[in-house]
Image 1 (cartoon, rainbow, N blue to C red):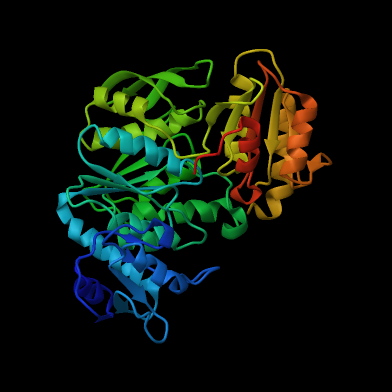
Image 2 (cartoon, rainbow, N blue to C red):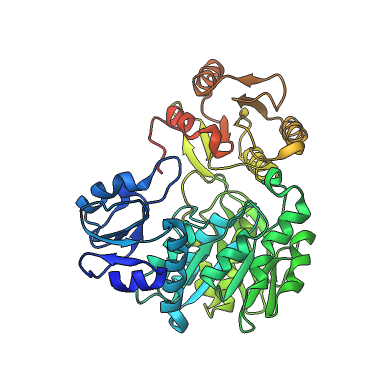
Length: 442
Protein backbone atom coordinates (compact mmCIF):
# COMPACT_ATOMS: atom_id res chain seq x y z
CA UNK A 1 0.00 0.00 0.00
CA UNK A 2 0.93 3.61 -0.42
CA UNK A 3 1.00 5.62 2.80
CA UNK A 4 -1.99 7.57 1.50
CA UNK A 5 -3.89 4.29 1.09
CA UNK A 6 -3.00 3.38 4.67
CA UNK A 7 -4.37 6.72 5.85
CA UNK A 8 -7.60 6.17 3.89
CA UNK A 9 -8.01 2.60 5.23
CA UNK A 10 -7.71 3.68 8.86
CA UNK A 11 -9.38 7.08 8.66
CA UNK A 12 -6.09 8.77 9.49
CA UNK A 13 -4.07 11.75 8.29
CA UNK A 14 -0.86 11.42 6.28
CA UNK A 15 1.86 13.82 7.33
CA UNK A 16 4.91 13.80 5.09
CA UNK A 17 5.78 12.09 1.82
CA UNK A 18 3.46 9.53 0.24
CA UNK A 19 5.69 6.45 0.16
CA UNK A 20 5.12 2.88 -1.02
CA UNK A 21 5.07 0.45 1.92
CA UNK A 22 5.91 -3.24 1.92
CA UNK A 23 4.79 -5.14 5.02
CA UNK A 24 4.30 -4.05 8.61
CA UNK A 25 5.92 -4.76 11.99
CA UNK A 26 5.17 -3.78 15.56
CA UNK A 27 8.66 -4.61 16.88
CA UNK A 28 11.44 -2.16 16.04
CA UNK A 29 13.93 -5.05 16.18
CA UNK A 30 12.15 -6.71 13.22
CA UNK A 31 12.04 -3.71 10.92
CA UNK A 32 12.81 -4.34 7.25
CA UNK A 33 13.44 -1.77 4.55
CA UNK A 34 10.29 -0.08 3.28
CA UNK A 35 7.91 -1.40 5.94
CA UNK A 36 5.28 0.34 8.05
CA UNK A 37 6.07 0.53 11.77
CA UNK A 38 3.07 0.16 14.08
CA UNK A 39 3.87 1.45 17.59
CA UNK A 40 1.61 -0.22 20.13
CA UNK A 41 1.13 0.73 23.76
CA UNK A 42 1.54 -2.21 26.17
CA UNK A 43 4.12 -2.72 28.92
CA UNK A 44 6.27 -0.43 26.81
CA UNK A 45 5.10 2.35 24.53
CA UNK A 46 6.12 1.59 20.96
CA UNK A 47 6.08 5.30 20.13
CA UNK A 48 9.38 5.54 22.02
CA UNK A 49 11.00 3.33 19.35
CA UNK A 50 9.85 5.14 16.22
CA UNK A 51 13.19 6.85 15.61
CA UNK A 52 14.95 3.50 15.95
CA UNK A 53 12.49 1.91 13.51
CA UNK A 54 12.94 4.64 10.90
CA UNK A 55 16.70 4.44 11.25
CA UNK A 56 16.38 0.70 10.64
CA UNK A 57 14.56 1.21 7.35
CA UNK A 58 10.87 1.75 8.13
CA UNK A 59 9.41 4.16 5.57
CA UNK A 60 6.42 5.29 7.62
CA UNK A 61 4.84 4.91 11.02
CA UNK A 62 1.43 5.06 12.60
CA UNK A 63 1.19 7.59 15.45
CA UNK A 64 -1.41 8.47 18.07
CA UNK A 65 0.54 10.63 20.50
CA UNK A 66 0.38 14.39 20.63
CA UNK A 67 2.96 16.05 18.41
CA UNK A 68 4.95 14.21 15.75
CA UNK A 69 8.14 12.11 15.85
CA UNK A 70 10.06 14.35 13.45
CA UNK A 71 11.26 11.57 11.14
CA UNK A 72 9.80 9.62 8.25
CA UNK A 73 6.26 9.75 6.95
CA UNK A 74 3.55 9.57 9.62
CA UNK A 75 -0.07 8.44 9.52
CA UNK A 76 -1.75 10.08 12.47
CA UNK A 77 -4.59 7.95 13.97
CA UNK A 78 -6.69 7.98 17.10
CA UNK A 79 -5.51 4.52 18.23
CA UNK A 80 -2.72 2.47 16.65
CA UNK A 81 -4.12 -0.93 17.72
CA UNK A 82 -7.55 -0.18 16.24
CA UNK A 83 -5.86 1.14 13.11
CA UNK A 84 -3.85 -2.09 12.79
CA UNK A 85 -7.10 -4.07 12.74
CA UNK A 86 -8.49 -1.86 9.98
CA UNK A 87 -5.28 -2.31 8.01
CA UNK A 88 -5.47 -6.08 8.36
CA UNK A 89 -9.02 -6.02 7.00
CA UNK A 90 -7.87 -3.85 4.09
CA UNK A 91 -5.07 -6.30 3.35
CA UNK A 92 -7.61 -9.14 3.31
CA UNK A 93 -9.73 -7.21 0.83
CA UNK A 94 -6.71 -6.63 -1.39
CA UNK A 95 -6.04 -10.39 -1.45
CA UNK A 96 -9.66 -10.85 -2.50
CA UNK A 97 -10.43 -13.89 -4.61
CA UNK A 98 -6.78 -14.35 -5.55
CA UNK A 99 -5.99 -16.27 -2.35
CA UNK A 100 -7.77 -18.47 0.16
CA UNK A 101 -7.50 -17.84 3.90
CA UNK A 102 -7.52 -20.67 6.43
CA UNK A 103 -8.27 -19.86 10.07
CA UNK A 104 -7.25 -22.26 12.84
CA UNK A 105 -8.54 -22.18 16.40
CA UNK A 106 -8.82 -24.61 19.31
CA UNK A 107 -7.69 -25.08 22.89
CA UNK A 108 -4.43 -26.76 21.87
CA UNK A 109 -2.63 -27.64 18.66
CA UNK A 110 -3.16 -24.37 16.75
CA UNK A 111 0.49 -23.60 16.04
CA UNK A 112 1.49 -27.18 15.26
CA UNK A 113 -1.49 -27.55 12.91
CA UNK A 114 -0.54 -24.25 11.28
CA UNK A 115 3.03 -25.44 10.72
CA UNK A 116 1.89 -28.78 9.29
CA UNK A 117 -0.74 -27.17 7.08
CA UNK A 118 1.67 -24.58 5.67
CA UNK A 119 3.96 -27.41 4.55
CA UNK A 120 1.04 -29.30 2.98
CA UNK A 121 -0.34 -26.29 1.08
CA UNK A 122 3.18 -25.42 -0.11
CA UNK A 123 3.05 -28.57 -2.24
CA UNK A 124 0.47 -26.87 -4.47
CA UNK A 125 1.26 -23.15 -4.39
CA UNK A 126 2.58 -20.15 -2.48
CA UNK A 127 1.73 -20.09 1.22
CA UNK A 128 2.05 -17.44 3.89
CA UNK A 129 1.48 -18.43 7.53
CA UNK A 130 1.44 -16.55 10.79
CA UNK A 131 4.80 -16.14 12.47
CA UNK A 132 5.29 -18.11 15.69
CA UNK A 133 2.00 -17.87 17.65
CA UNK A 134 0.72 -14.61 16.12
CA UNK A 135 -2.91 -15.38 16.91
CA UNK A 136 -4.51 -12.27 18.41
CA UNK A 137 -5.69 -8.80 17.42
CA UNK A 138 -2.07 -7.91 16.70
CA UNK A 139 -0.80 -11.08 15.06
CA UNK A 140 -3.70 -11.74 12.69
CA UNK A 141 -3.61 -8.31 10.98
CA UNK A 142 0.19 -8.47 10.74
CA UNK A 143 -0.03 -11.90 9.11
CA UNK A 144 -2.39 -10.54 6.46
CA UNK A 145 -0.35 -7.37 5.92
CA UNK A 146 2.85 -9.34 5.37
CA UNK A 147 1.41 -11.82 2.85
CA UNK A 148 3.21 -11.60 -0.51
CA UNK A 149 1.34 -10.37 -3.57
CA UNK A 150 1.43 -13.77 -5.30
CA UNK A 151 0.16 -15.78 -2.32
CA UNK A 152 -2.29 -18.64 -2.91
CA UNK A 153 -3.07 -19.48 0.73
CA UNK A 154 -2.76 -17.53 3.97
CA UNK A 155 -2.89 -19.56 7.19
CA UNK A 156 -3.75 -17.67 10.37
CA UNK A 157 -4.03 -18.82 13.97
CA UNK A 158 -6.88 -17.44 16.03
CA UNK A 159 -6.60 -17.41 19.81
CA UNK A 160 -9.07 -16.13 22.39
CA UNK A 161 -9.24 -15.04 26.00
CA UNK A 162 -12.91 -14.16 26.14
CA UNK A 163 -16.18 -14.63 24.28
CA UNK A 164 -16.19 -12.52 21.13
CA UNK A 165 -12.43 -12.61 20.49
CA UNK A 166 -12.62 -15.14 17.65
CA UNK A 167 -15.57 -13.33 16.06
CA UNK A 168 -13.52 -10.11 16.00
CA UNK A 169 -10.61 -11.88 14.30
CA UNK A 170 -12.96 -13.48 11.76
CA UNK A 171 -14.19 -10.00 10.84
CA UNK A 172 -10.62 -9.06 9.95
CA UNK A 173 -9.41 -12.27 8.29
CA UNK A 174 -12.66 -13.51 6.66
CA UNK A 175 -11.41 -17.12 6.36
CA UNK A 176 -12.65 -19.45 3.64
CA UNK A 177 -11.80 -22.57 5.64
CA UNK A 178 -12.00 -22.88 9.43
CA UNK A 179 -10.28 -25.54 11.56
CA UNK A 180 -11.35 -26.40 15.11
CA UNK A 181 -8.53 -28.56 16.50
CA UNK A 182 -10.11 -29.47 19.84
CA UNK A 183 -11.82 -28.11 22.94
CA UNK A 184 -10.23 -29.02 26.29
CA UNK A 185 -9.71 -27.20 29.61
CA UNK A 186 -7.28 -24.35 28.88
CA UNK A 187 -7.52 -20.67 29.87
CA UNK A 188 -10.58 -21.66 31.91
CA UNK A 189 -9.76 -18.87 34.35
CA UNK A 190 -10.61 -16.41 31.57
CA UNK A 191 -13.55 -18.29 30.03
CA UNK A 192 -15.12 -19.53 33.25
CA UNK A 193 -16.20 -22.88 31.81
CA UNK A 194 -15.43 -25.41 29.10
CA UNK A 195 -18.79 -24.62 27.49
CA UNK A 196 -17.88 -20.94 27.19
CA UNK A 197 -14.55 -21.87 25.63
CA UNK A 198 -16.29 -24.13 23.10
CA UNK A 199 -18.80 -21.42 22.24
CA UNK A 200 -15.98 -18.96 21.65
CA UNK A 201 -14.03 -21.35 19.41
CA UNK A 202 -17.23 -21.95 17.44
CA UNK A 203 -17.32 -18.28 16.46
CA UNK A 204 -14.87 -19.23 13.70
CA UNK A 205 -17.49 -21.49 12.13
CA UNK A 206 -20.16 -18.78 12.32
CA UNK A 207 -18.11 -16.61 10.00
CA UNK A 208 -17.34 -19.09 7.23
CA UNK A 209 -18.90 -18.38 3.81
CA UNK A 210 -21.40 -20.74 2.22
CA UNK A 211 -18.73 -21.89 -0.23
CA UNK A 212 -16.19 -22.58 2.49
CA UNK A 213 -15.50 -25.63 4.65
CA UNK A 214 -15.50 -26.31 8.39
CA UNK A 215 -12.85 -28.85 9.45
CA UNK A 216 -13.68 -30.18 12.92
CA UNK A 217 -12.33 -32.81 15.33
CA UNK A 218 -14.80 -35.70 15.35
CA UNK A 219 -13.38 -37.23 18.53
CA UNK A 220 -14.18 -34.32 20.86
CA UNK A 221 -17.92 -33.88 21.54
CA UNK A 222 -17.46 -30.26 22.63
CA UNK A 223 -15.81 -29.49 19.28
CA UNK A 224 -18.19 -31.49 17.12
CA UNK A 225 -21.18 -29.82 18.77
CA UNK A 226 -20.03 -26.50 17.27
CA UNK A 227 -20.16 -27.86 13.71
CA UNK A 228 -23.87 -27.10 13.35
CA UNK A 229 -23.03 -23.40 13.47
CA UNK A 230 -21.36 -23.56 10.04
CA UNK A 231 -23.48 -22.78 6.96
CA UNK A 232 -20.92 -24.44 4.69
CA UNK A 233 -19.76 -28.01 4.11
CA UNK A 234 -18.25 -30.00 7.00
CA UNK A 235 -15.25 -32.32 6.97
CA UNK A 236 -14.29 -34.21 10.14
CA UNK A 237 -10.97 -35.67 11.22
CA UNK A 238 -9.91 -38.06 13.98
CA UNK A 239 -10.46 -41.68 14.93
CA UNK A 240 -14.16 -41.29 14.11
CA UNK A 241 -13.60 -38.77 11.33
CA UNK A 242 -13.71 -38.86 7.55
CA UNK A 243 -9.97 -38.14 7.51
CA UNK A 244 -8.36 -40.58 9.93
CA UNK A 245 -5.16 -42.40 10.88
CA UNK A 246 -4.76 -46.15 11.13
CA UNK A 247 -1.89 -48.28 12.42
CA UNK A 248 -0.15 -45.45 14.31
CA UNK A 249 3.34 -46.31 15.57
CA UNK A 250 6.30 -44.35 16.96
CA UNK A 251 9.98 -44.77 16.17
CA UNK A 252 12.78 -44.50 18.72
CA UNK A 253 12.71 -40.68 18.67
CA UNK A 254 8.90 -40.37 18.84
CA UNK A 255 8.23 -39.77 15.13
CA UNK A 256 4.77 -41.14 14.24
CA UNK A 257 4.08 -43.23 11.16
CA UNK A 258 0.51 -44.03 10.14
CA UNK A 259 -1.78 -44.81 7.25
CA UNK A 260 -3.80 -41.75 6.23
CA UNK A 261 -7.32 -42.69 5.11
CA UNK A 262 -9.73 -40.23 3.52
CA UNK A 263 -12.45 -39.83 0.88
CA UNK A 264 -9.58 -38.87 -1.46
CA UNK A 265 -7.70 -42.15 -0.94
CA UNK A 266 -4.93 -43.50 1.27
CA UNK A 267 -1.25 -42.76 1.85
CA UNK A 268 1.51 -43.73 4.25
CA UNK A 269 2.71 -40.81 6.37
CA UNK A 270 5.76 -40.33 8.59
CA UNK A 271 5.97 -37.12 10.60
CA UNK A 272 9.05 -35.27 11.72
CA UNK A 273 6.84 -33.77 14.45
CA UNK A 274 7.20 -35.84 17.63
CA UNK A 275 4.61 -37.64 19.73
CA UNK A 276 1.44 -39.58 18.95
CA UNK A 277 -0.66 -36.53 19.87
CA UNK A 278 0.72 -34.79 16.75
CA UNK A 279 -1.25 -37.24 14.59
CA UNK A 280 -4.50 -35.37 15.27
CA UNK A 281 -2.90 -32.09 14.19
CA UNK A 282 -1.57 -33.79 11.06
CA UNK A 283 -5.06 -35.08 10.24
CA UNK A 284 -6.49 -31.57 10.53
CA UNK A 285 -3.78 -30.27 8.18
CA UNK A 286 -4.35 -33.16 5.77
CA UNK A 287 -8.10 -32.50 5.73
CA UNK A 288 -7.61 -28.87 4.75
CA UNK A 289 -5.02 -29.75 2.13
CA UNK A 290 -7.35 -32.29 0.52
CA UNK A 291 -10.27 -29.86 0.52
CA UNK A 292 -8.03 -27.27 -1.10
CA UNK A 293 -7.03 -29.60 -3.92
CA UNK A 294 -3.66 -30.96 -2.80
CA UNK A 295 -3.17 -34.53 -4.05
CA UNK A 296 -3.04 -37.07 -1.24
CA UNK A 297 0.51 -38.16 -2.11
CA UNK A 298 1.61 -34.52 -1.90
CA UNK A 299 -0.23 -34.18 1.42
CA UNK A 300 1.90 -37.04 2.77
CA UNK A 301 5.10 -35.39 1.50
CA UNK A 302 4.14 -32.05 3.01
CA UNK A 303 3.40 -33.59 6.39
CA UNK A 304 6.76 -35.35 6.34
CA UNK A 305 8.58 -32.13 5.43
CA UNK A 306 6.90 -29.98 8.08
CA UNK A 307 8.98 -28.56 10.92
CA UNK A 308 7.26 -27.24 14.03
CA UNK A 309 7.75 -23.87 15.69
CA UNK A 310 10.35 -23.76 18.51
CA UNK A 311 9.99 -25.52 21.88
CA UNK A 312 7.30 -27.95 20.76
CA UNK A 313 8.28 -31.58 21.30
CA UNK A 314 11.89 -31.04 20.23
CA UNK A 315 13.96 -34.15 20.93
CA UNK A 316 17.50 -33.10 21.82
CA UNK A 317 20.59 -34.64 23.38
CA UNK A 318 21.70 -33.64 26.85
CA UNK A 319 25.31 -32.87 27.67
CA UNK A 320 25.97 -36.35 29.08
CA UNK A 321 24.09 -38.34 26.44
CA UNK A 322 20.58 -38.42 27.88
CA UNK A 323 17.49 -37.41 25.88
CA UNK A 324 15.85 -34.02 26.41
CA UNK A 325 12.27 -33.48 25.24
CA UNK A 326 11.76 -29.74 24.99
CA UNK A 327 8.05 -28.92 25.08
CA UNK A 328 8.50 -25.71 27.05
CA UNK A 329 6.35 -23.40 24.95
CA UNK A 330 3.08 -23.86 26.82
CA UNK A 331 1.05 -26.26 28.96
CA UNK A 332 -2.47 -27.27 29.91
CA UNK A 333 -3.82 -30.57 31.28
CA UNK A 334 -4.36 -32.16 27.85
CA UNK A 335 -0.94 -31.23 26.47
CA UNK A 336 0.72 -32.28 29.74
CA UNK A 337 -0.81 -35.75 29.55
CA UNK A 338 0.23 -36.05 25.89
CA UNK A 339 3.81 -35.00 26.64
CA UNK A 340 4.06 -37.41 29.57
CA UNK A 341 2.78 -40.22 27.34
CA UNK A 342 5.43 -39.34 24.77
CA UNK A 343 8.13 -39.38 27.45
CA UNK A 344 6.99 -42.78 28.66
CA UNK A 345 6.94 -44.06 25.04
CA UNK A 346 10.64 -43.41 24.48
CA UNK A 347 12.49 -46.71 24.02
CA UNK A 348 14.88 -48.04 26.63
CA UNK A 349 14.70 -48.83 30.29
CA UNK A 350 16.37 -45.70 31.66
CA UNK A 351 14.87 -43.23 34.08
CA UNK A 352 12.11 -40.82 33.02
CA UNK A 353 12.09 -37.40 34.66
CA UNK A 354 9.57 -34.62 33.98
CA UNK A 355 10.58 -31.09 34.94
CA UNK A 356 7.24 -29.29 35.05
CA UNK A 357 6.28 -25.66 35.46
CA UNK A 358 2.90 -24.23 36.32
CA UNK A 359 -0.10 -24.69 34.03
CA UNK A 360 -1.34 -21.11 34.08
CA UNK A 361 -4.83 -19.63 33.80
CA UNK A 362 -6.80 -22.70 34.92
CA UNK A 363 -8.80 -20.85 37.56
CA UNK A 364 -10.42 -22.73 40.42
CA UNK A 365 -9.71 -26.07 38.76
CA UNK A 366 -5.97 -25.43 38.70
CA UNK A 367 -4.95 -27.27 41.89
CA UNK A 368 -6.88 -30.42 40.99
CA UNK A 369 -5.55 -30.34 37.40
CA UNK A 370 -1.97 -30.22 38.66
CA UNK A 371 -2.57 -33.10 41.07
CA UNK A 372 -4.05 -35.15 38.21
CA UNK A 373 -0.95 -34.53 36.09
CA UNK A 374 1.22 -35.72 38.97
CA UNK A 375 -0.95 -38.84 39.26
CA UNK A 376 -0.56 -39.58 35.53
CA UNK A 377 3.20 -39.17 35.81
CA UNK A 378 3.48 -41.47 38.81
CA UNK A 379 1.32 -44.10 37.10
CA UNK A 380 3.73 -44.04 34.16
CA UNK A 381 6.78 -44.37 36.42
CA UNK A 382 7.91 -40.80 35.76
CA UNK A 383 9.61 -38.75 38.47
CA UNK A 384 8.31 -35.17 38.62
CA UNK A 385 10.43 -32.16 39.51
CA UNK A 386 8.17 -29.12 39.85
CA UNK A 387 9.70 -25.69 39.25
CA UNK A 388 8.36 -22.45 40.72
CA UNK A 389 5.07 -23.91 41.97
CA UNK A 390 3.73 -26.07 44.79
CA UNK A 391 0.57 -27.02 42.86
CA UNK A 392 1.97 -30.45 42.07
CA UNK A 393 2.42 -31.09 45.78
CA UNK A 394 5.33 -30.72 48.22
CA UNK A 395 7.95 -31.33 45.52
CA UNK A 396 8.49 -27.79 44.28
CA UNK A 397 11.87 -26.27 43.46
CA UNK A 398 12.47 -22.55 43.74
CA UNK A 399 13.61 -21.89 40.17
CA UNK A 400 15.71 -22.86 37.17
CA UNK A 401 18.97 -23.04 39.14
CA UNK A 402 17.41 -25.34 41.72
CA UNK A 403 15.98 -27.55 38.97
CA UNK A 404 19.37 -27.72 37.28
CA UNK A 405 21.02 -28.68 40.56
CA UNK A 406 18.41 -31.39 41.19
CA UNK A 407 19.07 -32.88 37.76
CA UNK A 408 22.83 -32.76 38.25
CA UNK A 409 22.32 -34.70 41.50
CA UNK A 410 20.47 -37.37 39.55
CA UNK A 411 23.31 -37.63 36.98
CA UNK A 412 21.22 -38.57 33.94
CA UNK A 413 23.10 -40.44 31.25
CA UNK A 414 22.54 -42.49 28.09
CA UNK A 415 19.15 -44.23 28.18
CA UNK A 416 17.63 -41.64 30.54
CA UNK A 417 15.16 -38.99 29.33
CA UNK A 418 14.05 -35.61 30.70
CA UNK A 419 10.86 -33.79 29.66
CA UNK A 420 10.78 -30.00 30.15
CA UNK A 421 7.29 -28.49 30.00
CA UNK A 422 5.29 -25.63 31.48
CA UNK A 423 3.34 -22.51 30.60
CA UNK A 424 5.28 -19.62 29.11
CA UNK A 425 5.41 -17.81 32.45
CA UNK A 426 7.62 -20.61 33.78
CA UNK A 427 10.44 -19.75 31.34
CA UNK A 428 11.70 -23.33 31.26
CA UNK A 429 13.50 -22.89 27.93
CA UNK A 430 16.40 -21.59 30.04
CA UNK A 431 16.67 -25.02 31.65
CA UNK A 432 16.84 -26.65 28.21
CA UNK A 433 19.81 -24.44 27.39
CA UNK A 434 21.53 -25.58 30.56
CA UNK A 435 20.87 -29.25 29.86
CA UNK A 436 21.98 -29.24 26.24
CA UNK A 437 24.63 -26.52 26.28
CA UNK A 438 22.97 -24.92 23.27
CA UNK A 439 20.80 -21.80 23.02
CA UNK A 440 17.09 -22.65 22.73
CA UNK A 441 16.18 -21.31 19.27
CA UNK A 442 13.45 -18.69 19.40
